[in-house]
Length: 324
Image 1: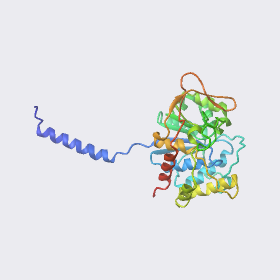
Image 2: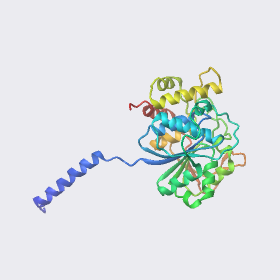
Image 3: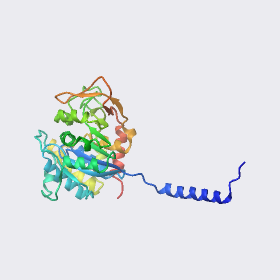
Image 4: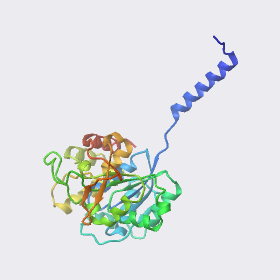
């Protein structure tokens, strides 16, 4: 047996001690994310943004407003960030479009002054985020893909520096029917992709890896028991969500308690825990009317067809109810 000199054993022990001390305090770098979302219509975008802000694993490098009245969406985001402690995050104003969906949370947004702070265009915000950290930024797309496709068209080279695109959209094998009552509901024209099918096709063909979360995996509902716990919590984020929920529910069905479906929360939760919604490779095609169909040929997207909805809700609740 070869005897190790005492001085060498001492150095090795010191190295192990240092490694142990360093290892115990090492924190993994947060994942850089820029999000493009149509906050203000349905309520799920607000919950998704709240979860992003409450998750230390995420470094939110920018927020882009998508579809419809994007200037008013900017004001909603500005107020949300101000009240929820997210100041300093870059905001981009998206391309204004015609939308047939009601802006249910418009009154809350209008109470924030227009022109409060200069904002970039969403196209430049997205491209700058990709170029500032090549191969290190996830683009989280939670609305119609008009801004995203415009950024791709403006500068394909910079756009392809995104690490990946995580996208809520489409309907592969199930439509809007609630899982517990209509598990076999036929696929439907999902709103995000049907709003701008040409943009969706361009993004799928961009060459950037895509993780898709369709209706199949995102019909996760926030039950009344959890809502009561969240709305009674009293933090800055949950207070903002409470007011936005009240405007959304009153606009949809006055004086009624509406159970929201948290479509956009599922991809955010999966950024934090990939086991919540496993991905599988598929080849998808998008028709002119926005319908999503499975096609033959090499896969062009990774798709989650089933999520663990209860664990998604548990993760969101833990983050939003965490002490300051």
